[in-house]
Length: 278
Image 1 (tube, rainbow, N blue to C red):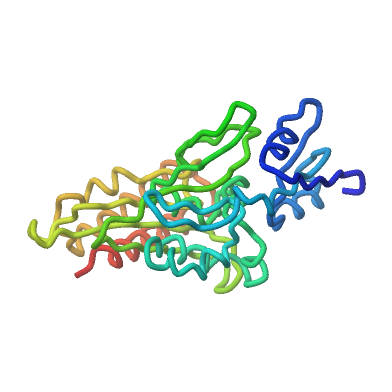
Image 2: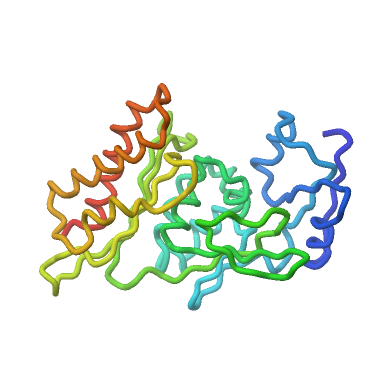
């Protein structure tokens, strides 16, 4: 790290220009909780880091349709946001479980997504919320679904999503190696609703497992078992087993697969019980 150059652009345009400069390998620095460790271990090689944490376009949480959360907003700011507690409690719940208070005070939601680790807690939640990333590059500003691959070399400005519909409930379940400050071994984000006017049948369900598949995506075959049906204990159990089957199919027979097979089934059942129970 001794030869690494540090720059702090004064504007969004300057940051985009620096990141797009040919012949120089740059990495974005916001909170730095992942990047600094990666640099120290030699896992990431670059010529300079571009500190974007104080650029106004990357800050702030704004209400509206859609809700907008700046990429440089910290996990602590999300956890403490009255707006998000009221309108997007699923995101608040996930951010409250990330790391320690010290990490949450520094780490940003943009960094969590850009690092794209399989254990990232905010990614399954953002996919569950059907969020889009607002990204800037030399080609301009565009919106890309978080579930899709973000363009290389682009700077994430914010995340936008609609508030879940009234009457829906959310759940975020995770397990780690220990109770506190543990990286997620598996997680499940869920959003669901039951229509009492339609015989207590499931009218909405989104399920997104974390640290389970090669990319973050909705488990549509699991959702299909319940949508339009009454969420009985038997169906919820079947849904957990279907999630486990999908996981085993994607795992390639790793040594931990049998343990995780049972764990992902249980997490799925817990999430479904929370969002669909009377």
